[in-house]
Image 1 (tube, rainbow, N blue to C red):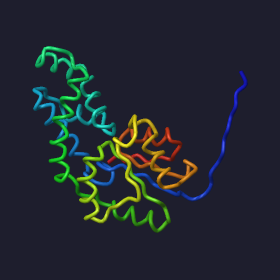
Image 2: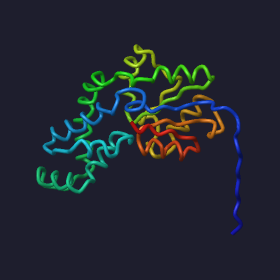
Image 3: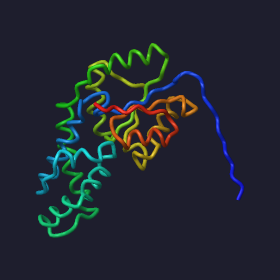
Image 4: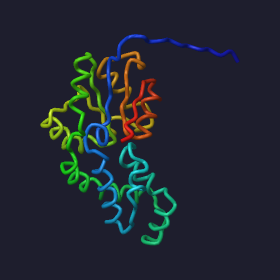
Length: 214
């Protein structure tokens, strides 16, 4: 079979930067989702560690819960507590517990990370558009965005996990940002994230990526 190779090189300026939310622009250490997940599982009678709660960070929250449920020792503890291996209904059950807890924790862990506003100012000075993506749902972002706005942070675009499917590491949130910002080609965009799946999403979208390690 004949193969076809298409390649273009972009050498212009960065047109847009797409930032993650928790752990990248605010909530240093992504404390809100970690604490909420631990509490939700606790209310279901199953203990999980901070590392287990943090492991799938960056995924849409229901997918995040599913990944935690799939851990062998978590599945074993669920079996011991509920008499069955975790199923789809159990994932929904934990998610229903998680949402109101997460709403409560959001405002407690919404301070901007030091350097955030300075970074946004630099991007604006360089005429870069500012997008954003998150594993939070639109319901949760309706709480978080006004708090961020009060602190001086307001991206041009916000795309959340409930806007597209599937979530990260699929590229759809990144590409939806680019569409709303009317920015192309994709390698004129930069994705900034503090999670592995967030960086993978940026790469899968054909963007440059910057990983926040600390």
